[in-house]
Length: 357
Image 1 (spheres, rainbow, N blue to C red):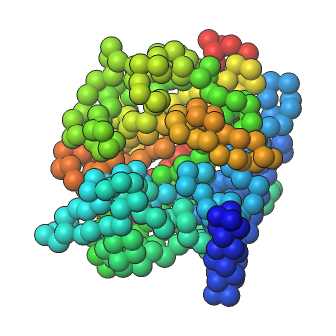
Image 2: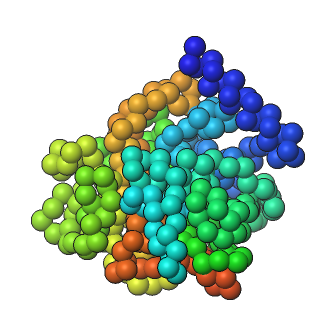
C-alpha cells in the first residue's frame, strides 16, 4: 500500500511540474564510445558509459531506471546538492548578526540543503549540445530568498562537458542577487568503476591527496579540529585497497579530507578497479572532499539490481562541512557581486597494473 501511495504522490508531483511549465527530461552528451546522461531533475548524472580493458562498455554510476524513482530518492544519486552540501549542525547558523533556522532532515541537522535541496528541484536546460567536438549541457536554477531557510535569491548553474580523451568536466557556479548567503555545491555521483551492478568496491585501490581530515562527532558534525591522517585508517596518501582498514571504522568512510594542494585545480584522488582496468582521476578547485563508501545502501537500482553497503565510492569535492559554524574553516559565504565557482575534472583511463598508471 505504501508503495502505491508513494507512486501516486510521485506522479502527482510530476503532473504539477508539467502543469507549471517545467519539463523533466533526460539528456545525453556523447563523444565516441564515451557518453553521459543527465536529467534536469536535480541536475543529476544518471549514467556514465565507457569501455573497460576489454573494450566492453559499462555504466559506472549507480542510479535508477525512471525519473519517478529519483523523485523518491534519499541517497542523492548523481545530484547537484546544495544550497549547502553536507551537514549544518543544529540546522542553524548566524550571518551578519541574524540567526537563520533551517529545515532539519538529518536528525537535528540539515544535510544537502534540506529536504527539498537542489537535488530535488527541477532545473532549466539553458544550453545543450549532444555531440560534435564540444558536447555539453548547462542547467540553471533560481533559488528564492528563504528557500529551505537560506537567505537571499541565488542563481545557480552547472555545466557538464565531455573532452578528449575520456574527460568529464563539471563547472558549478552561483551568484547571490541581494543578500549574503552560504553556498557549497557538490556533485554527488556514486562511482563503481567495475560497473554499477558489479558488487562492492572494497578491492578498489584509492589514493587521496590529503594529509588531514576534519574529525566529526557522533552526529557527523565537524568538531572544528583539523587532524593528520598519519597512523589512522584515513591515510590514503599512498595507494591502497579501500577494504584494507575499513573494519577499523564503525561502518565505513564518511569524512571530509583537507586537500593538500593550494593550486586552483588540485589533484584530489585516483581510483583503480583491477578487474575492469578502469582508472578515475579526480581534480577540483574546492578545498575539501567528502570520501564516502555508501555505508548504508540497501535499495533497488538500475535493472532491478539491489545496491548493498559499499557498492560505490563518492568523492564529493566541497567546502568544509558546517563551515558556517566554524570560523577557522575556509569561508563559504557568497556576497552579491562576488561569484562562486567550483570546478571538477574526471579523467578516465585504462591500465593493467596500478604501478603502470
